[in-house]
Length: 466
Ligand SMILES: NC(=O)C1=CN([C@@H]2O[C@H](COP(=O)(O)OP(=O)(O)OC[C@H]3O[C@@H](n4cnc5c(N)ncnc54)[C@H](OP(=O)(O)O)[C@@H]3O)[C@@H](O)[C@H]2O)C=CC1
Ligand SMILES: O=C([O-])CC(=O)C(=O)O
Image 1 (cartoon, rainbow, N blue to C red):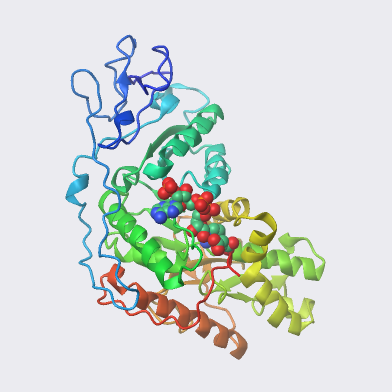
Image 2: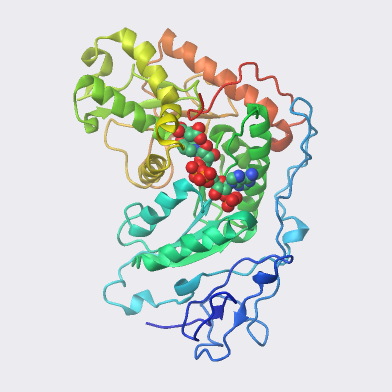
C-alpha cells in the first residue's frame, strides 16, 4: 500500500495531523472555504498520483464558483431568444481545473501490489449530480457496493451539488467513508460541473428543481433546461469522449435532449432519459394481475415521454413467454386501468409516502446501467429514452423518446426492430410524441435551434404529479 497524499483540514473539524483530509470546491465569497493545512502532517508534500503540485505551503488556490452560466435570460416561456450553443468552458471557470478528493479517499493505493485487488479492472469515474438528494442517497451506496459495475470494478465517485447543498454533500461523503466499501477508491465533491464531470465515463444527472405550486410545465422546462444546457456544455468540454449519460431529473426526456444538443462532441446515442422505473412499475402490475412473480414478465416497452402520456406496451410484452393479451384476457383493464396506473404511479406514491419515489428510482438507475453493460437476455429487451434519429417505428426524429433497446453489454444499444404496433398503440405513441415535440419547441433557446415558442396546450404531468 502506498500512501501518497497530503492532508488538509477544515477549520471546523481539524484535530490531529492524521485526521481526515478535507478538500472541497470552494467559493470566493465563503470564508469557511479556505481549508487550513496541517503542518505536522508526516505525508505533507507527497502527492496523489496525477495531482498537480501545490504552491509551497500546499494551500489550494482559491477557485471561483461559477454558479449557473445561463445560456439565455429567463424570458416569458412563449418567446425566448436563441443562445449560441458553444462547447467552450465559460471564462469564469478558467481556474477550476484541479482534481478534488474527500477525506480518506485522498489516500491512494497501488491496487496491483495487493494480491486481492491486482486482478481488478481499471478504475472508472462516475459523476452524479443532485448527489445530496433523495435518489442519490440510495444510489451512491449501490454504486459503491459493487452491485452495479461488478465486484472487480473499482470506482471513483464525483459528486455534484450546489452552494446550498455543499454541507449535505460533505455528509454524504462522510457516510461513504464510514461504509468502508472496498471498491470505492475515490470520492470528490464539488459545485462546478467542469470540475466534477472531468474524465467522467458515466454521468448520472439526477439534480433538478422540483415543480413548485403554480409553476407551469413550461417554466419547469426552462429552469431545468438551463441546468442541463450548462451540464451538457461541461460534459462536452471535460468528460470522457464516450461518456454515457443517464438523465433522471425531470422533465427527463427533454432535459436529455437539451444536454445532448449542448454536447456535440459526445455521440447522441450516449444520452438516455430514465424510463426504467416506468418499465419496472409496468412489469410489477402485469405480474400482479396475472398472479405470477414479476420475473416472468419480459419484453416490456415504455414508449414516449416520462410523463402521464407515456405508453406502457402490453401488446408486445410477454408473461412466461406468451403475449400478455393471451394471459390477461381482460383487455379493457389493460387499455384503461393498467395504462393509467403506470402513468400515474408516481403520483399515487407521493400521496402515500409524502415524497417522490427515491429508492425504486435508484434501483431502476442500477437496472438501466446494468442493461447497458451486460448482454440483454436472448429475445428480451429493455426500455430507455433515447435519441429518435434513425428509429424504425416512424417516430418523429430529433427527440428523446423511450423505445425498446437491446445491448451487447458494451455500453451501447440497438433499437429492437421486431415489434408490433397496432392502431391503439400508434395513437397513444403519437400523443406522447406530440407532447415531446411541443416540449422541444419550448426549449429551442436551449438547444441552439432558434427562438422558443411554447404552445403546450394541456398542462401534462410528470408521473409524480396529480
Ligand atoms: N426519471 C424518473 O424516473 C424519475 C425522476 N425523478 C426526478 O429526479 C429528480 C431528483 O429527485 P430527488 O433526488 O428525489 O429530489 P431531491 O429534491 O431529493 O434532490 C434533488 C436535487 O436536485 C437539486 N436541485 C434542486 N433544485 C435545484 C435547482 N434549482 N437547480 C439545480 N439543482 C437543483 C438539489 O441539489 P443541489 O442543492 O445540490 O443543487 C437536490 O439535491 C427530480 O427532478 C425528480 O422529479 C424522480 C423519480 C423518478
Ligand atoms: O414526478 C416526479 O418527480 C417523480 C417521478 O418522475 C416518478 O415517480 O416517476
